Image 1 (cartoon, rainbow, N blue to C red):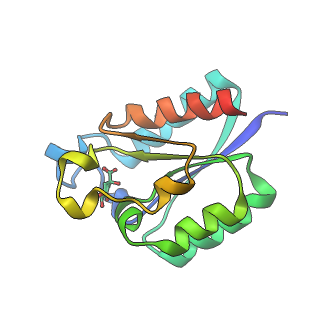
Image 2 (image 1 turned 180 degrees about the vertical axis):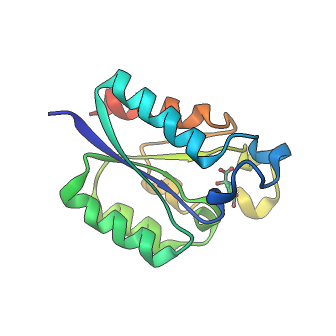
Length: 144
Ligand code: DQA
């Protein structure tokens, strides 16, 4: 059976395309979803692609992934830098996690340099724009 990857996107990523394109690029979240679906089918994976502006909703989806996914790809957006709840949920679920950021968070403001999620991720990709999602799916496919 095809391995299932839950792809989660945090707050404000629904605005991609119009949100600070100099930092995040011109691709919309729909474009990134299409890229993920295309990559997943090449890799023999299925993807469940979601976005939420709500921390609790993301935590619930992560908890539910115990029964519905084999791995999680997450761009936690601003919650990367603030949310112990998301990091704890990822740790509790115990699935392999790939963390993705469109921008290189280490080249930006100091408050973006730390991510609570990184400690529970198998690996982190940042700075490659939408390509990071594709690379992370490849890495998870290898891992699975
Ligand atoms: C982001 C980086 C975060 O610092 C920021 O809050 C985001 C997007 C990225 O994809 O580059 O919303 O995760």
